[in-house]
Amino acid sequence: MKYLKTTIIFIFLIFFTSTIFSQNWIRINQLGYLPQSIKAAVFCSKQDIALKQFEICNAFTGKVVWKSDKIHPYGPYGPFKATFRLNFSGFKKTGTYYIKASNTHSPKFKIGDKVYNGAADFLLKYLREQQCGYNPVLQDSCHTHDGFILYDPPHDSTFINVVGGWHDASDYLRYVTTSATAAFQMMFAYQQNPGSFGDHFTANGNPGSNGIPDVLDEAKWGLDWLVKMNPRKGVMFNQVADDRDHIGFRLPDKDSVHYGIGLERPVYYCTGKPQGLFKYKNQSTGIASTAGKFASAFAMGYQVLRKYYPKFAKKIKQKAIDAFKYGLQHPGVCQTAPCTAPYYYQEQDWVDDMELAAVQLYKITRKKKYLQEAVRFGKREPVKPWMGADTARHYEWYPFINLGHYYLSSIPDKAIDNQFIQFLKEGINRVYQRAKTNPFLIGIPFIWCSNNLVSAMVTQCHLYYELTKDPTYLPMEAALRDWLFGCNPWGTSMIIDFPKKGISPKDPHSSFWVVGHIQIPGGLVDGPVYASIYNQLKGIKLSKPDAFKPFQSHIAVYHDDWGDYSTNEPTLDGTASLLYYLSALQKEGRNPGF
Image (cartoon, rainbow, N blue to C red; front, side):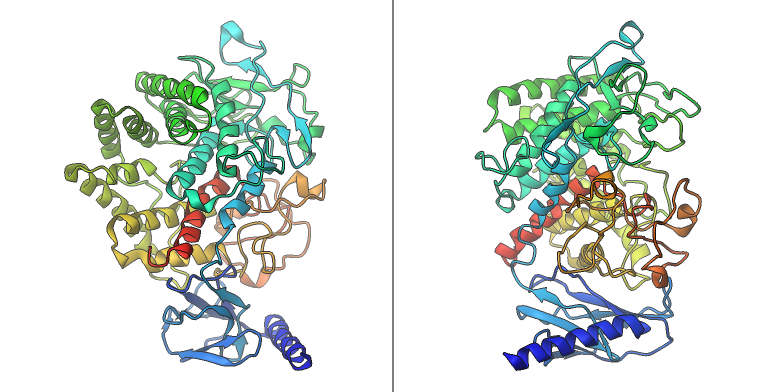
């Protein structure tokens, strides 16, 4: 025992000194690797060096257990003069290890079938923290006076009950755009991988069991609010509150921002025309983007909730049908509304929302007309335009993944499924062509919320492989997965407080943390942005010296600092979008070779 303690202390000192004084770093997936998966690390150096071999060592004894020369040099990247990709996919023995190369040691990592167990459920911690109305983290309620109607002249300033749903990010606005997307993503994850979710919380998010998987409890929380935002046929609201909310940090149950009518907040009616009360206006052209999101969320809700809530499921099935019809009548995008600042969700596409809605309606009605509509809309946007692009405006092409393509790729009709499989492949390939030139195999444009794009692309890669068994893009899928858990220039996970023993965001841009001193584990933060974007955003001021300064570059910057809302703010939809992939990895661990 004394020998073991001495060995562990010695290994810790090696790690500590190599991190502080070295000009070399080895980036790995801190959460770990499934035995049969593609496994890689990235060696980064501030020096112009050569690397010929690396070793895998037992983390407890330091003994070398595997050696390899499977090293691909990539040259300079970002802040580094030399980079190398280290492939150890051939090493499959379970255990805890570290990598050693050129007198540099990586953090320790695990290889095992259970490394992703509970990961998807862990993300639900953050989604419960985002609840509006009753908040289980605070054990209190917030925004119980919402709200008063805007942009519907006969009813302007009159009260409508829209209490509930989720706060969008670390502010207290609520959007159908992101909430409907998040709810759909939660239900999609459950539909695909039901065995990966537990039942440890009740319907309102309090600890306990109610016989319903927690992910469906959380999705139902969102659907209940969406019903309020679409109270009857032909009436839709898109947003609660606006950027007058952005006056500083405060906990939601202590929110005292006034919008003119007591503590009630504005509820924006969908008009299909530009909106914005003060200096800035959006560029809305229709309602279909919102109507399509309502319809797809309600149709999916019918599929996964009818076992538990048959009456509610029947109600939202009809609402899905009505919402889709309304979208057909009002084509175009219904953007979120700015107010005092120029920042809003600049969504430009809507045919993807209608495609997904149509294919979901086909699934629940089996009416051919919906399948025909889905195909018609799907052909209008074969590939999400951000895929392969250098940049895009904020949420310009949203949702970042078109799951309608996946569903049409699964239709037992070769004339349809082959075409949509090709659409999926083309999107992946465009990103792959950018990715293959750098050591992290990252082809994502570093725009605001880049981690949401990572989540979208890793999901699309996984679904494509599931459909085709084509291994071409598996290395990029693995790299995107690993990027989120530390195989990136900064060596940090992008999920708050996860994994517990690794490097992860600890100082998020959130009132819960900054003024409440309440950590919000499980939130996927926005992620790195181009330095050119970071340098022009308003109101960013770091609260402390930048611990990641050696790893910042013109390519991208990231800060674990509450003062940086552009890279370290967690988001509702980004977190929800990762549930599918993590639940799929847990399923794969249970069923190797799946």
